[in-house]
Image 1 (tube, rainbow, N blue to C red):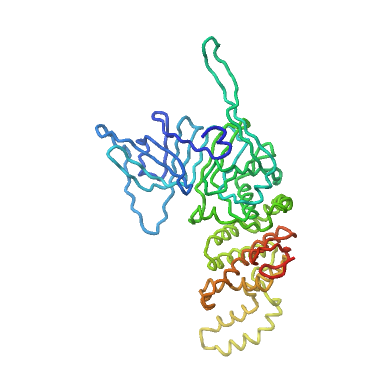
Image 2 (image 1 turned 90 degrees about the vertical axis):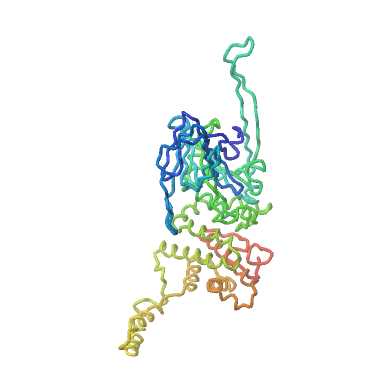
Length: 497
């Protein structure tokens, strides 16, 4: 891949990483891999865009020395935890290195002339130089046909200049002549984040897999600083939420001010084992309208709430919330309801912890309730005397003062100022139908439960928007036609503004 292409999409070395006599290889927990005998090591991506590592040893049948390492026979026991391995390749010197971790030895295929060793690897980190980076570009799959694309109204231009050095005829050495080799022009959206900023580039159809809408997120030192990996994760999660589809991170590349690549990281996309092409072809469902005539509102929303999202991300553990949320969106409805309800209930629990309320919210003040139930507990003690159930029954009486999960949720919604409609209440209760299989009692009519799944997704989106302080309109995917409604208007209801 040329220098210009490396600025637009991830640059993976296409050649052999092992240079005999110059390369140093180190391994941990990969005893089956004869690293001192390897002749070739290539990295690439397969059709699912997972990392592919190919290690080959050329065999001289007339003078094969064999490995000097004592190969350990590993016996695997069902259910045991396999310790991940690590492979480090240093083609030239200590600064230039490739680190494969975590990785696992997964077998060998041998012929008369060669042995090919298979490694399963999920992350590769490459460093070309110790020079500090001033530009970092993240590579993203599943960008979606979202409003961010049209919001990208600022232009960028990359021009790569070639140099000619050498001696020709009567010209003295060295002669340097610069010439334009390649040029590309595109658009990006620029957003501020805390004390820095970032750009979202759509890279076009010429880069990355054809079945995905691909983009890059660019960070420049000149914007203030390059955010930490944790902050960049928050940015990706925020963009995923407002785009309405999960952005799939596959790595990053670092550069200096002149566009020279300093290193890169590769990751296999985390798809929760779902088919990646299907994920990337599913329609995006942004929580607010991203149509052309609403783009300024959409852009203003993205900019306005990103810092508040970052403030709440760790406090309310949005990582756990969205991990379950995106997983649930790939499950057939209505079987997604338990996953959606679990994520919402966990968010509620974290909110109660942060506002310093008792997560097990009570109906009546404890002292008053204790006086009310004293005669009941005395009666229980009398009726169940000489049995082993006295303590158990008295504990059950104590639990009468606790709210049910749904009551806690309605209390939570009331405290954050988010009205809940009748359809939403039915959706909140429907999680039990799916979890316990009792939806079959509805006579095989899945249409109502399908609607409850869509409404439940809207409840989570409304909750996050409300916690961010948003007061505008959202898209109600729980109502036919996907109307826009004020954030205070419940999902699934026929009332439309």
